[in-house]
Length: 335
Image 1 (cartoon, helix red, strand yellow):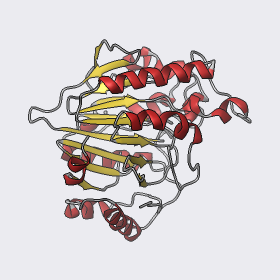
Image 2 (cartoon, rainbow, N blue to C red):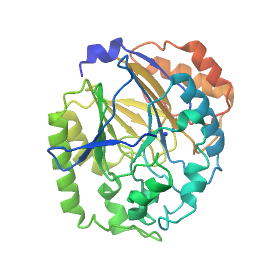
Image 3 (spheres, rainbow, N blue to C red):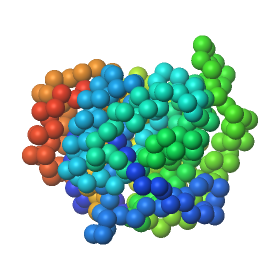
């Protein structure tokens, strides 16, 4: 994607998070499954992205879900993306685990959120029964749910590449501590990662979409608690760079960051961004922050983000409306 197009696009920052219709599956020449979704008749696409959310409606989840419903209606969203850690603390125990309904179906009830959800796994999900989250049984319980390890969503103006980042973390394998990780269908680690990177590289090379966005759970770089992920910087980032990926979007750190490297590859870390690029509207939000800020702190954060981005925010009145909502956020902004 040409940087000129990126810089000429309008971007607005905001707070919030996450959606129906059976996804259409089409074959992909690489091993990654590919799903297709058509944009609106005018060519636009609106979506919400959420991560680190499944808390049985507690820890701000219900409050964020309510506001998601409002903004989802205003933006007429088409779909929702989840960056993982879908169910705390230890994923799901099985396909009959009530946490699926208590943390998902019974929380995201707004009419505007009855859209398809496209989800990847986080490290907390791997601490439970991973195959349960991947099971089509959950789709029979709530048709919005679609969770796979790694896959592609094509929406004409943008291709989303979902990447299973948890197996990259070597410490989860060698030093799990008190945690147990469900590595079924993943082990051995080296073979799994090698095949995934090969398939991702092939799929990215095939993509002709104006925008290429990669979605994962773990941070690529971060100034917050978890910090950088060396395995992703060493193994995944070169594949993204060599294929002209525009954005990497993740969760995991429960904070709000926008990171741009010297070569201007964009990394959006841990949720909170509405961007209007071409005809793409992307809203990212976090429901499980590490701390709460006052409304004035939130607005100062938004102003700080305006200084960081190489283009101006266009929807100040829209942001002011959202600044009235007490949505927790963190202060890290890396320019």
